[in-house]
Image (tube, rainbow, N blue to C red; front, side, top):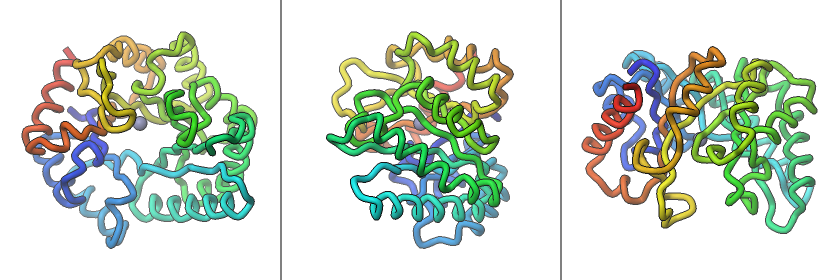
Length: 271
Ligand code: ZN
């Protein structure tokens, strides 16, 4: 259970404080906050409260969304990422997950260039704050407006192009990358470059009824989670297994029962 981390968005109906107390009571080891959790709150106080509850803060979701049609839009994104780095630093989160962004109609290569430029602009801030940045490749179904980075290889290419800065790496989420024939190799390569920063789990349902908010609980879909987890662990990865499930169906459930289901699915996965 120490390696189990929950993304707060998984239990979206709960307040920040409820997530902290309920996860801790369930024996969950880590928590990844989403930025909405910090709204109207002092991030440093949320951080203290979390550590006092015995939870490890794994990351803050999310930065990114760097591409834009105009320099002004792109600058706004850079400014927002700088604020995100400040929040993560105050919170005590060692990592920010980057959903890198895309602009519908703009060539993906151009968006990827803008993403690399945006990351390069905020890297010194991340370094000064001691906060790592993890590029999360997103499933190609989100290539229109959420991310032009759709494979581990593309994420690795950006890290390589920026001379592999130690603060920059990858957040690998099975939902986005399970289908990739290069996956095992790319996991190994990322780890060898010391840039495999985070590992997210959930499942892919058939049929998926909503592109965004119909993720499955581990075990109810077709993702070979054990296989991918074994590949990740075989690299020496000792980080958390972060459950991140956007689901209208599960958000509609009693959240205590939902949390119990998650813990049980996680334990089944360990057997
Ligand atoms: Zn994720």
